[in-house]
Length: 137
Image (cartoon, rainbow, N blue to C red; front, side, top):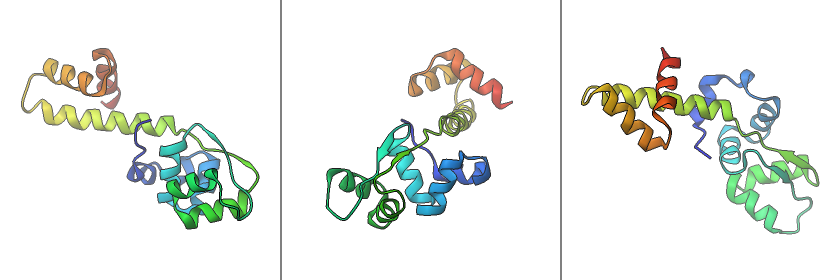
């Protein structure tokens, strides 16, 4: 999964994010939520219950930190929690990167070479890059 850029989540506006993500941000903060989405987006997590150390607790703590993991365990312990992938946000982020890179590359090389370079870097087809650039106009 590509990185979900924290700054992009701020730019999108919390009110446009999935409700489940909005609740996570309110509970554990933006940084921990972004870390959770990056590590577990698209997964349903079994949130550990109680104070007995477990692999699930250790994994959660390693992703969001001890404090945020504790908050999740107190509020959702014993429950299953779906972590959204944020595919639209990831796609928007990648498209912004592509447009920015295209602008920089076309100062140094032809449009065709820039598209080919970007396609290779992101492992996408030339047509996909062209569509991303066209959508940005």
